[in-house]
Every structure is written in structure tokens, then in C-alpha cells.
Image 1 (cartoon, rainbow, N blue to C red):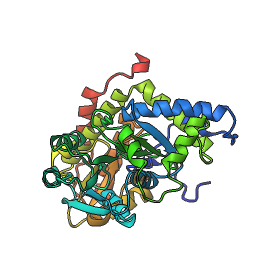
Image 2 (cartoon, rainbow, N blue to C red; image 1 turned 180 degrees about the vertical axis):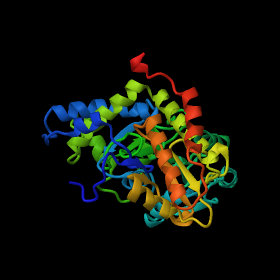
Image 3 (cartoon, helix red, strand yellow; image 1 turned 90 degrees about the horizontal axis):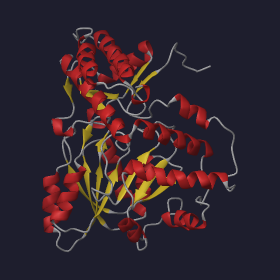
Length: 401
């Protein structure tokens, strides 16, 4: 029995880890296997080919690493850069802050471009830095596509255009942990050199697999990069790719079977349809927040995230109490405000294998919590706004037509 038992299902609306589909749970419910047998390499080969589709790349090389997004960050950095290399990195929230901290601790010379939390990356400053860098001392531009702490999505196509406008050879490294498989992401078209995500986000798997995809340019950089790496060394993976056995160390067999089922679900729905579904859920959530009379932490519409909404609360309310009340009374898990926005925002995650009615249940729960903590919300207001939008925008389920 669960130590903190509550009747019914837990309504998990943190922005990761997310709900795991029943078919994925069943696919993972199996014994261990010998990963050196023919079966696991055969499955791995198809997984590597199919993973490229979620990055929208034909030229990238994927790596399925038994780690978290933090390990995927380290893999991206240490395989392409050398100690002392200059990077430009954007500080817009807690997770971009943590990636910057990692870059500094790994010995890189980090040029931090900071914005207010709730704003996107300041790309005008990037343009000025690239224009001044005629000696090409900047070796990489590092950006979080979707900052989960504030609900801000950055414009990657614009970053690529700036790099191209100044003919700058810096590598383009992207954290897509809470965006890939949910938001529009085009690795080849946008010239992304290393993209990465984590299994526990839009893929709707348990935590434990960091997925990294490297462009030919990034692989070339890895040949001369002098950063120390052992566990995350791409060369070890590439060696076993050539041998056809694929694994330099023991993978999680269960996660591989889960990934197979998760990808099958994505492809059955259609990746473009998945992205459209997330856009609907994001719009519905924002309409609910507006109906409650609350504000989005994200300061401009161009930065709105379709995977997470950070909701600002009035100064007389501690947003942590909203999260506590949701869990204790309604079996609803919401995201805390982190660091600079701790106590000021709560976060509604709307990503992964999630549908409209599940979201409406969450929004109803939030309304009751707001009433509990003394906010003068009109019960049903946000749910009604979301319902009206979703009733007019939700398509028929393709497989049931």
C-alpha cells in the first residue's frame, strides 16, 4: 500500500515527471534480459532510427543514455567543448540557471545573458555579442527551449537566423527537456547541433533515460574536445554502434521496451497532432487563468509555453500553500514556484499523454484550492472558459472516426 494513500488516482499536473500511459506500464512490466542477445540490439537499432523522428532530423546521431536531463546536459557539453571555451548562455529561470552552473563547474568561460524571470532569452544581446566576436571566441550558444520554472518558450529559429546572419561558427546547443515531443522542434531546419530531452517529460516514461542527438558538426567537434568524460563519452557509443551491439554498458531493458511503446503511441497519434494537442491544452489553461483574474508569469504572448503555465498569485497568498492544499485535500499535484518565484507562482503542467478532460479535472481542483486559500474565485469560471474553448477546438479522435 502507498505510504500516503489517497482514494482514486493522483492527478499529476507537475511539469514532469508526467502521467505514464497504461500501455507503456504494461510494456515495461517484464523481466530482465541479456542485453548482449540478438533481441536487444535489434530493438535498439529501430529505436535509434525512430528517435530521430521526434527531433525531426535525418542527419543527427542519437544516444540513449541511462541518466536524467542533467546528465544529458553534461553529455552535450563535455563531448563538444574544452575547458576554458567561451559559451553564451541565457539565464531566464531555475533550469537555465542550473545549466549555467554546470557549465561553470565544468570549467567553461560562461558569458551569461540574464533576463527577468518571465521573459524569454534576450536575443538582441546575442546578436551584439556575435557581431563583436570577429575572432570567433564563442564556441557554443546554449539555450533552454522551454524554461519549466516560468513557462517561457524561446524562439530557436530566431537564434539560428542570428548565427547565420553573422556567419558565426558557434555550436548551437539546446535543452529540449520539456519541449521535445510536445512543442514544435526542428533540429535539422534550425541547425541545432546538440538537442536533448528526458524520458519523464513529453515522452511520458519514468525518469532514467537522457536522449541526446548530435549533428555531424557536433560529432566533428567531439573529435577534438578536451573535456574529461567517461560515462557520457560518445566515442564509446559510436564504437559499439559500428559493432552492431549498441551498448557500451548495461541499459535499462524495461525503459527500452517502454520507449518502444511510447514512440508507437506518438506515431499513431501523429507528431503534428501531438503538438496541436499541447497547443490546445496550453490555450485552455491560459484562458482559465484569465477567467480567475490571475496573471501568467510569462510576460508576453510570444513566450507562452504549451507544456507548463506558471500562475502568479496575489502577494497575500503563499503559492506553496496552494500546492500543499492540492496534495493534502484533493490528491492533485501541482508544481511549486522555484527560487526567485518561490511563493509567488504555482505551476500547472500540461504535457505528455494527457487529454482535455484530464486537464479540466485539474482546473476544477485549482478553483477549489483557490477558494480554500482565500482567493475570491468564482467557482466554475476557469473551467467554463476552458470548456468553451475546448468544445470548439477539440477534434475527433483519429483512430475512432
